[in-house]
Image 1 (cartoon, rainbow, N blue to C red):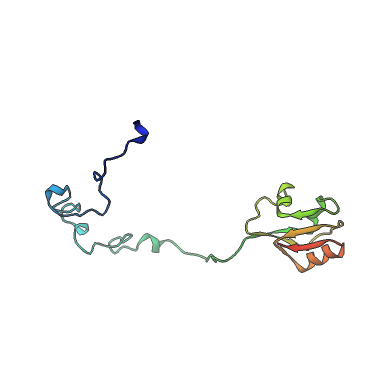
Image 2: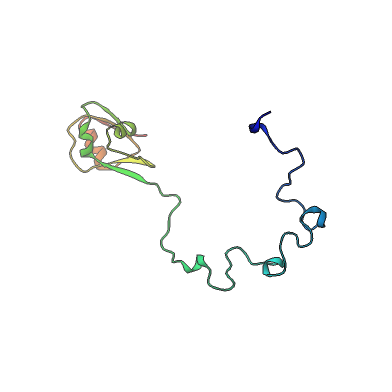
Length: 146
């Protein structure tokens, strides 16, 4: 037996929903933990956040905009960034991160058609613009969507 194994005896601890207002012997009788008088001692006490009729904080603060739950953050990369790879290389999200082109891929990587490419590459990312896929395949490479 050591300090790390100590625990209360079975039945000695109450859960948070033990019976209130059941006499002095219970340790929580008479006012049932609500103190004496006042609004919070009565039934029908106000909801959390209610400020006695004053305009509550959650309504005083200005609200702007909207965030769509289903939107995805896609990282766009231009064709010119792929020039750092050797001819015939396989370009994936992992290799883009190793080269430092992409720091955080978030929900996906998309290749955009801006810039020139002079090498035959097999590019495996989440999405391509039509122009980017056309340029990659014109050089004999492959544009594969993963």
